[in-house]
Length: 140
Image 1 (spheres, rainbow, N blue to C red):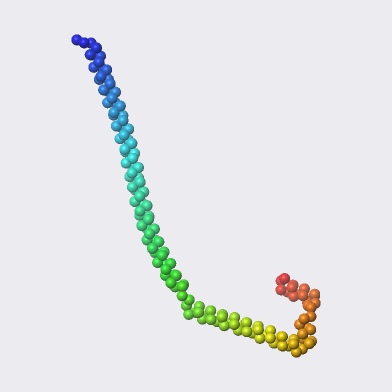
Image 2 (cartoon, one colour; image 1 turned 135 degrees about the horizontal axis):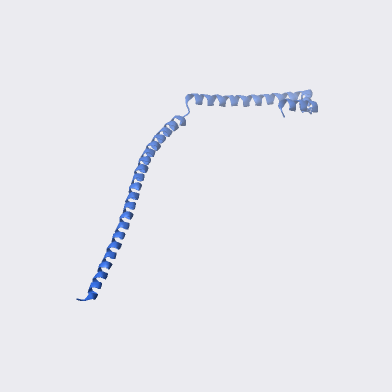
């Protein structure tokens, strides 16, 4: 009856077919995008689990190291009786050596004060040949 209606139906059906194809393509693209996002989420979830496990393991290791460090610090913070004895021996030795050096110095000064020959000998310059031998024997 109206031939243009036949053509109009053809254009409408063609337009609908194109619209269906475009919507199908958009849905397919959205489906692949969502699948990729889901895959990325799964990957990140796996990595998060591995990081949490590693963190828990690290926390245990840190606690063990802190405990060991505390034990060593407790053992090393107090000197033992041997260390205290050695420190006392060294202090006594240093005091004795200082006293001996002072006594010898006083004895020399007394000798130099009473004996002019000893005083002259003590204040005499060292001969160069002897000084060279002393330097050579001492490595200087």
